[in-house]
Amino acid sequence: MLKLIFLMLLLLALIRRSSLQNNLNFQHFALIMNADLLG
Image (cartoon, rainbow, N blue to C red; front, side, top):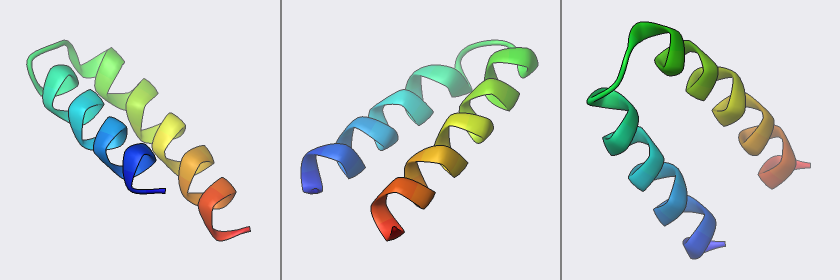
């Protein structure tokens, strides 16, 4: 589970350097990941 959190932080760091569209895509991905971790 820690690996998933680390990957999410890494993706977030990469996407902060990218475009707004990619940031929105990451937010959608993060919601899916959070639902998967919680459920």
